[in-house]
Image: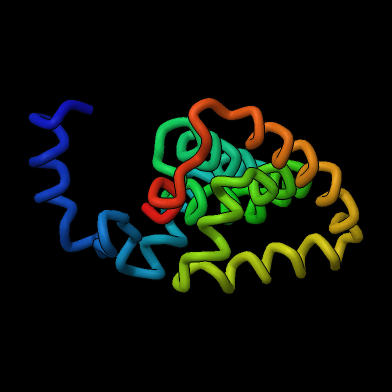
Length: 147
């Protein structure tokens, strides 16, 4: 939707959404359940929606936003191999460890991986991520990571 269509839509729908630092959520639990039952009624449909949202944020957002959104979407879709790949990326890992508001999420992801005996796969992905980081030109800057 263009801005001309989206602006009136957001104004009309404002009572139904909560805004949190640029992100929106459905204000009413009953409305959330109704939307969920209409558009993502099955676990497979829910997982597909989480994969779609994860893909969207992975390709079109900053490392800080990726670290907030993509691992959570991968965990919710129960795509553990993708979760490992994402959290092992140097930019995302640095964000997860340095950002106080999402650091706890990293521990949740690691617990989920350990629960399903997937934590052993992290080493392979971390080695690949470190090798790619060393080859990156220009090198990743500390101030870029902190954004």
